[in-house]
Length: 363
Ligand SMILES: Cc1cc2nc3c(=O)[nH]c(=O)nc-3n(C[C@H](O)[C@H](O)[C@H](O)COP(=O)(O)O)c2cc1C
Image (cartoon, rainbow, N blue to C red; front, side, top):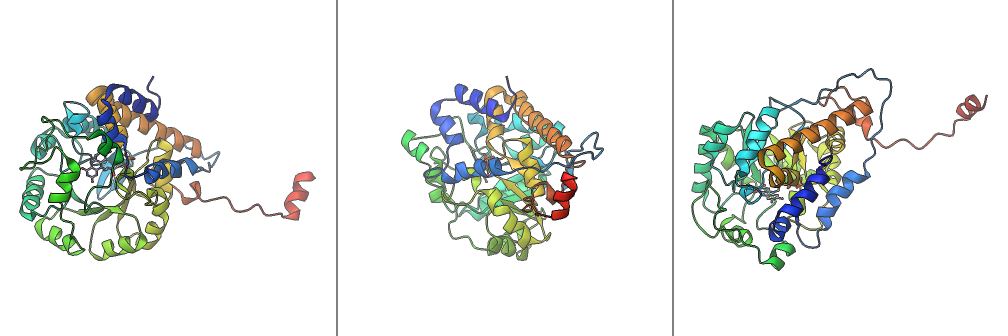
């Protein structure tokens, strides 16, 4: 039975070779941040409003001028052909008709052009800034020509985090799994490739550079502090993604959900705020919205769906998350995902020991 995203995870684990499962599932170091991501959502308590008259909750919402079917999109994840031969093509085919945007990783196993031809919902391109800026420029230009709608620069990865599972497994990508949009070699070992090809000397000037080569909205992925969020706004980005990369980069970083309130307060509505890392249920999407995220990105569960059943599996994951979200909205009295009240998660005030209240109660 596939009744929760956890069910998809269990099925995917049975189907995938152990080193591939570990590559998908693992985090950096002792996986403290990986665990913190889901633990932070587990601690959230939703405070329902009753007798609200909400009959049919509306999950759609607007992000960067586009209507999304629900307040979530697919996070950029490289090498999806490891999970299923159709890889990213299956992902965009499942997401498109559901109005769910897909952030296509720079390490996609399918070309931007093929994905654009298959997609029916917005595609965004995710990039790591390589030392070879000309290669990045060509890729961004191709995506723009293929009508991608935003560029996401991942900023938490001057090199890959120490992923102990991959080191123990001696993980290498099989020869048929290669990035379709990049030339070169050395891709079989992602950690080595990043160390030699990613530009570790990036500073805030990169945002200006990116804006100089594209008219597309620029999104920064991997912001975890109020100070960096404020710098990102000053640099003129259109959106930020509060993310610790699913616990795969800095072990010891806060859960994204823990980092969110400070970022929301610091940004004060000056740009769109997205969040990823640890979203595993519809109620998690609702909680992130209530805490100030405009929408979230879904990572590993999409890979579980792909591994279990290709395009149908991804469709199943998206439909399940949407159903869970609308159930949670109905049960909390939330009419629209576009307007989720803060009160949904605000901790209840300490109980006031009002004598009248007690009197009233006992009368
Ligand atoms: C197998 C895998 C590959 C990933 N590849 C990329 C990538 O190419 N670019 C990127 O910015 N983030 C990448 N990420 C991170 C995701 O975009 C996202 O931040 C993270 O998975 C969200 O956490 P979640 O899996 O808990 O939902 C990858 C994550 C996984 C699990």
